Image (cartoon, rainbow, N blue to C red; front, side, top):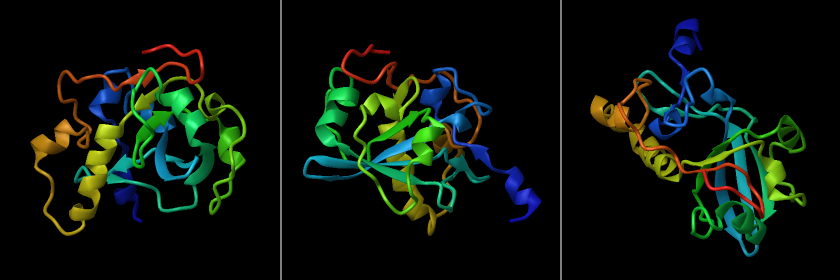
Length: 185
């Protein structure tokens, strides 16, 4: 990669996070969490570095071993994170933004998703933002982007892919605390 190519990288800043006060300077401190798999009573969460957007506004993830997985009890996940807030069952492809303590990242291996036996609240430090609609949209755009034309500027701006503010945006649903006695944010 050339120095010029590195300069066009900027953290992806969905409008829904901007509405909560996140900026290009701070959003990169978040971890991108995805419900990757649900099998029986277990769910695998992938935790990856915050994605960036290229000069064409396409969301990109680091191609390295920084993505980690952790297996959690799906009922504990539902109780701690979904119940009373999202009012839906955990689904494959659900996307969240949160600060994940470094100790959580350090405990995991790149090719394994060890069982998480501690409370779900210990996976995050502070609020959790539900980015499922935005995450699903950019994921749906990722595969066709490899063979299609560049996204129109208006659509890219609406999805928070251009780095340019798009006016007043709805705030991402946010849960201020994760666990049995939670606040709605």
